[in-house]
Length: 348
View 1 (cartoon, rainbow, N blue to C red):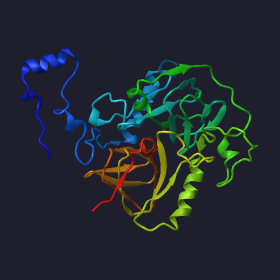
View 2 (spheres, rainbow, N blue to C red):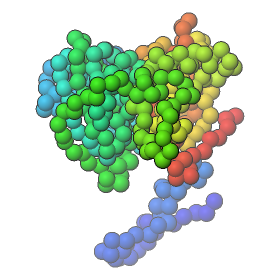
View 3 (cartoon, one colour):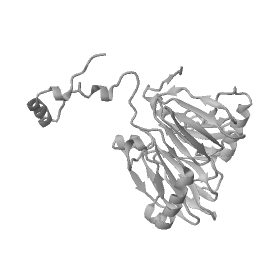
């Protein structure tokens, strides 16, 4: 391996001359941006306990009305980036959002794409470009970039969901902004998951040349996802996670351009060794309990918890107790595949 020179080896007057011209030598910094074999991740694996965060989120509901907050959210901050970090991994933002009975969060649209995983409560809904999507435990609801969305609550108990956005990517590109609007009037029909895409393998007949929506399905009900996982589990070898990807039902592509979502089932007591991949991952626990070891750090998780794994992590899962565990994995594989980067490596 070539030994690179250091900045300190250069004469002071030369360094000062470079600085005056807003330039600098590459070689002292090269290994910081191009390390050998694999990236040096800034992100750190971490567990966010729902049991501990929930009271703080409810307290936020007492302290700040939704009219002042617009979106009442507690951000999950990557400890590798320090306090106040607006990301959970290099490319993914996550936060827990609260909506109280009778509240409405005003309409807006923004350049980043977002998805919601419902953690607790019933009676809330999201209207996305006129389509009213009910929000039930475990559901995945999309609000793609550029689409109007607002939230409302017709129930009698708090509703909490996990937001996932590709916000860090848009902030890095200096392309992140939002536009405010008026509350939407929903169309008088069920959402597409209950109508056009209620049965696997079937889509509405299209007239020749008719345009297909870029995001034809906005809600993915957990009841159907769990049923699919349980059926597939009967034909999956022990020691492997049962997994289903959330996709665009018209094209089979990931449901959002830069973020992927994968539903996972771990059989009771089963140990699963995941491949090492270039994608960063965020795991949210829908049901069950267990433990995961990420790069040698073990966390114990249960329903409602969220934990992260940086790029090229070595990850091992184990479901605890007598029941299977169900999780949704949020990842950036779609983004990496678009730029020709995604890779998987075996483990010894």
